[in-house]
Length: 439
Image 1 (cartoon, rainbow, N blue to C red):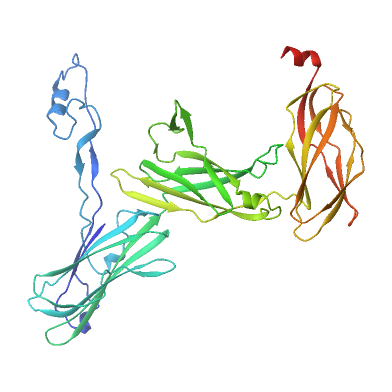
Image 2 (cartoon, one colour):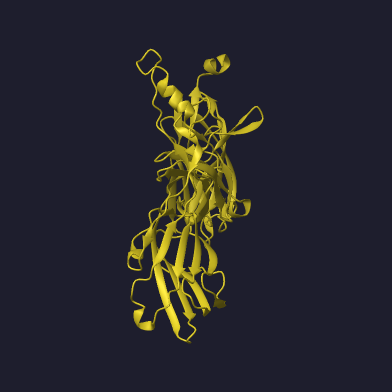
């Protein structure tokens, strides 16, 4: 908060460039008083002297005198008297992005004459725009000697960099002469947090979860004081539903993974994890969720030492969806463990990702060293219309124990004479029958 005393002296138009006296104070919220405890053991030479002095000190906590944190508050200091030219120097305390900038403006008539038609205007100049912060643009009819006009302005800071508060005052003297002067107050807006995001596509054999997206948000406190993280949430776009993965269920109660105290110390980093799933109406339409898609935006709310609140919202987060080509093959069902040389079944889902072209598909099954397909290779699957799917049950067996990869499926589009190869579709654990019985 800034206190500005703009005095209205009695001077002429030619004297406007002369220094205008004014008092500028930077008012911030008080801070907790700290002291440096000095103590010693009773067998040392000072004995109990140091401990008694700390007990008598009114700023220490009764019964916990050796703590640096006291019971008193330290009031902000006066910024000092400055001139019109010196007002271009930066204020002593910076403001962080997302906080609310508050100023108390007082225009005082220190002459012995009544001035009329006083208009006070406060603008905030940023690197990209100029904002009018005045509560009222109406002129005050008159201002008697030793009287003042007060105004309080507030603005949520949404840009970083240099900001200049421009206070302009115009009035009319008793002689009908119009007077005007301005004062400038510069301050810096800094970033309080450093936010980094990473996207992870779910790797799974089940098509019901292959469209899941995991978002990791790394938030670092780059200020010099601790923060209380009140809320960190993800507002998803219309295509997704979101689930927060930052808490666990203990005895029927939801407990945050960060513990009971959600403080973020200076330069510390915290990681938040979210899982996004496409809504049913979008997931069923192949080809919609592809290319660059909008995921959503992060909403971060925090509080500093004495409860000052700040809030930041990131821009819309985007990710590049994995490309599946014209035809996508995924698995609906597959067993985790199978018996050696015994047939097992899997269910495949084939999707035409094209939005315009109908396909006529032929399925071919090619054996590998360990995986052998059971059935007719080269069978016709029929026509598959754009953005539609079909499910296919297949049978196969493995001749080798261990973790085996399911490979060897080929889909051929007879219209374009184009073949799509699918290897390493999934993995199964192949065990002997004796091992299966023992387990």
